[in-house]
Image (cartoon, rainbow, N blue to C red):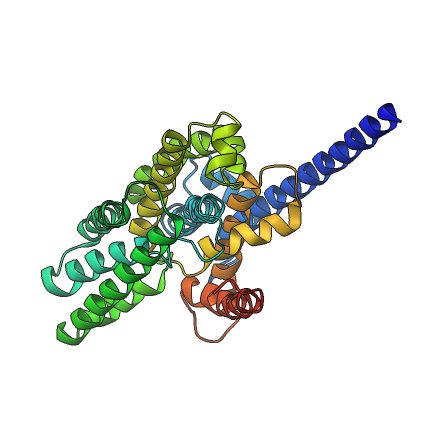
Length: 343
């Protein structure tokens, strides 16, 4: 009987592993296909061989400029920002054990947005300064939220409430800046606030790429501890997890990735909010959905950007499309949580 039970458990684990590998592989393949579509599609559809030759360094009239200057930076921004938003959102939701606890809701992206809008409307700064201010604003906001929510012990509810309060205050600041800003600068501010891959330059991408390449492995290495932390503080401590150190590393990794991604593309709505739940539903239980959540973020950003460019007569920024996708899910989630008595 005992051997049958062990065999049953092992069979279930193998099945869950196969499901994880299949889902992750399909998401990775879909991400690659979307990256290829980003390079091939535009006002002019170039043949695959010409795009490949251009990427290998060959200079082709028209193709080189379109691919290397416009499409490649746009694709890389969507790839790395999407992965950062997806992974960081999943980290916050798992760590704080609340599907509403994502960077958009608890004020992190609002801090970046307020700093960026201030630079655009008041300082009339260029894109490089806007990105730097956005990064600094996001990090400063996180520090303020942490200090205000810090008590004798870590409290999930306190952190979320303080974050929501900070977000409301910063959104008021943004509204005020839009009211007093120059009319000629307001369209640029709105484009940034909507979240867009338009106009991203190759020299703006290295900070985001380095942040993702450094902090994704950190999050993956801590993914088992992240899953244990979801059980609660006492259970995690009993199982030998250094809760304070692990939580600090995870939050720091997520915050830095979110800050760099937002400084590059603006606050692309709902990607951090949607990626974790979608990945969890696809992968199931038993294995970490850290990597799948990042890949779902990539798929959401790249697919939404392609939809925004080609599905309508007017071209829309990627954040408009992700907002349309995410808003119904948020309403559904709030209704479900209310029925369960979570509020």
